[in-house]
Image 1: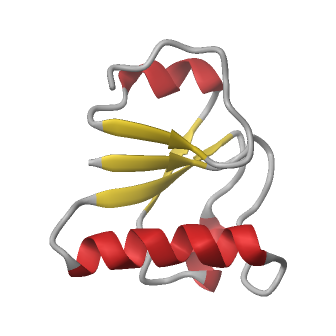
Image 2: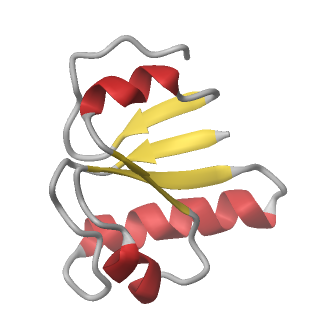
Length: 87
């Protein structure tokens, strides 16, 4: 699993900027190639983002410390957090 970590307390909304489209595009392309990927949101309800990107898997975490529990590769989008990761 490849997890793209979206900045805390920020919704990922369609039509608001290039980073949203870029991240969704990566997840879609990985899925097309049979590679599991998701967008991980921290401290933000994922419902609006799921509505705007219905074909992109989302995972909601309560806080940044939970990033350490994710299996697979972790990619930080726009903001890195000082947390240990497995990969």
